[in-house]
Amino acid sequence: MTRTILEVDRLALVYTGRGRDVNAIQDASLLVKEGEAIGVAGESGSGKSTLARAVMGLLPPTTSRIVGGRIVVEGVDATGFGPSDWQSLRGSSVAMVFQDPLSFLNPVVRVGRQIAEGIALQDPHADRKARTRELLELVKLRPSVIDAYPHELSGGMRQRVMLAIALGCRPRLLVADEPTTALDVTTQGEILALLDELRRTLGMALVLISHDLGVLRRLCDRIYVMYAGHTIETGRTAQVLGAPAHPYTRGLIAASRLTRGPDGRFSTIGGDVPSLQQRITACPFQPRCGSAMPVCAEMPPFLDTAEPDHLGRCWLLTPEPGGAPALPPDTRASEARNVGA
Ligand SMILES: Nc1ncnc2c1ncn2[C@@H]1O[C@H](COP(=O)(O)OP(=O)(O)OP(=O)(O)O)[C@@H](O)[C@H]1O
Ligand code: SF4
Ligand SMILES: [Mg+2]
Figure 1 (cartoon, rainbow, N blue to C red):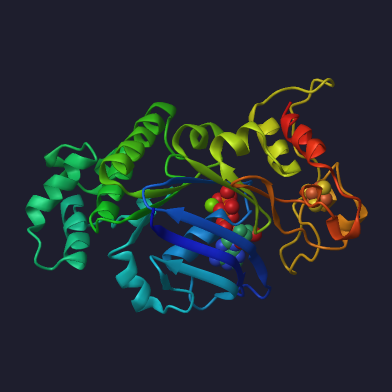
Figure 2: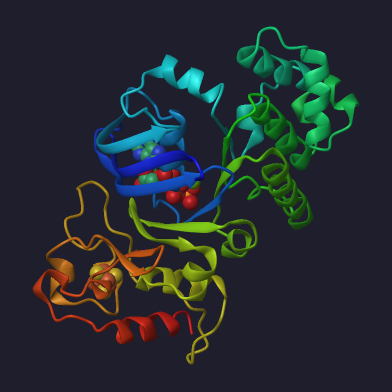
């Protein structure tokens, strides 16, 4: 049986700084098995980066608090971990690459030394020189990069350096948060191809966060869609993008296609994202949903089965939505087929 590397179960998390609470994660779940490529999609502010940082133990300790749910990494419950526990986990099981390598790399330290420092943290007895060269080769950089400072490299090369540092601890899971957003299209393609190749050759699991559904379609086995701190849909990539079960996912796909409606306007999801200052006690998408029923404003839907291995958080998928009339399976299936049409 394939091993589970990461399990996030109904996580809820609050940022408490700046004089007001932000309930950035309210009900998010995520399951990553050994070697799997998982995509996380959702509009800006839906909590993708917060979720990624939570599973890496990288949230600000004084201004964030987990208020519900669990994070389990390789069978170990890490929900209550302090900074030093997370440090050792990051040095072994999990690693992360970010959108902006410059904010991560030390500008006054040569690249080779930064990679070597990462190696030493994981294994003080390692041959750092040899391993640094090996890592540079893995990310397809010339050995001469060892002597360069970050500002002497292009954006794509800096992203490869960050990847080399992340791979230094031989992670079984790599979390990549919008790793190519700041790069030109050609370099984006190269970095994504590299990520895909490394995942396959190193047998590593990947969680890839991206606004670009096309990228997730190409690289990921399964997808999670987030909205206002909730996981609202998950399933195999072909299921979620080919026959989405949730009205929000359908809107997201239509908007990503840049198609024009009969009025000549580009397809968008109307309305505003709900405030995160309070916990949402109804369907988070209800104010913007064209299919909303009375129950949607009264009770939060749970992640329910649309089809095997395909879940959606929508009362339309539940036979008796909080007492509302049942939708026969046929109707649900045809709903799904019409998606994004
Ligand atoms: N350190 C912080 N303190 C307070 N609020 C924060 C902090 N970081 C993020 N937030 C808020 O938490 C919510 C989720 O933010 P997050 O960055 O996780 O979203 P995201 O889905 O990654 O968005 P994007 O696609 O723009 O990167 C937003 O409302 C954001 O303003
Ligand atoms: S639960 Fe209701 S409001 Fe929410 S997405 Fe489904 S139909 Fe729309
Ligand atoms: Mg983000």
